[in-house]
Image 1 (cartoon, rainbow, N blue to C red):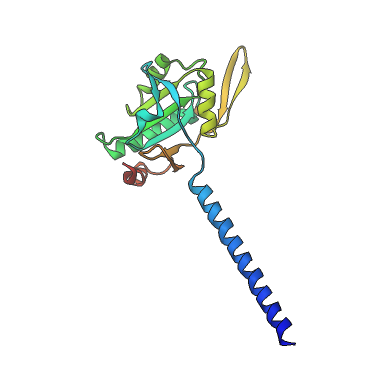
Image 2: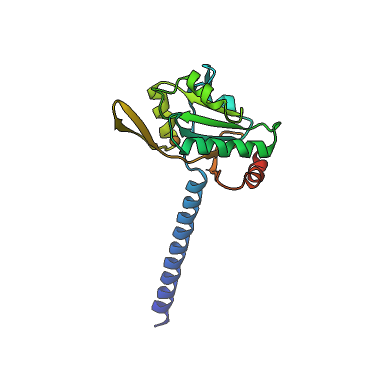
Amino acid sequence: MRLPRLVLFLSALLVGLILLATTLLITNSQRQSQNNVAIGGPFRLINHNGLEVSDKDFLGRPVLVFFGYTHCPDICPTKLLEVSEIFRALGPDKKINGLFVTIDPERDTPALLKDYLSSFDSRIVGLTGSQEAILAAEKSFRVYARKVDTGESGYTMDHTALVYLMDRQGRFINVFNTEQDPIGAAKALAPYL
Ligand SMILES: [Cu+2]
């Protein structure tokens, strides 16, 4: 009568171990997918000086990437101002870039981007390109953008207003809060310089 009890105990132990192993495996894969969230990737776009650039041109420094458009009534100018103030708090000598990728390539020509961005920190680069290239960039950053007709041939854009911090190797680190105090934000960016 002792043997069945031992078998029962060993089976229970085995089940327990399998459960533990499964839990550890699931937790681990969740942690991995959190670290390797597929945000960002290769792109080939046109900068505000009309030159073709790629993601490779921004390696070796941290980059804040955000999407918007020059006709944006409030969110984009606010983000650009916040990023400019953070860059100013970091200091003029710091190697860092902001990438303002237009979601409205139809209207945002390099010349218009250049003119618009002249009011902000010079380390913010405007990017535009073909509709296809912009759509590909939106997709790789998981950005939502949609045209909203306002009548009389006008339109605005609904869009994701997140700012993505990419490290010197071009890897996504996190969504960066630009609404915080610029000095605090600059401190948070310093380890990535
Ligand atoms: Cu906007």
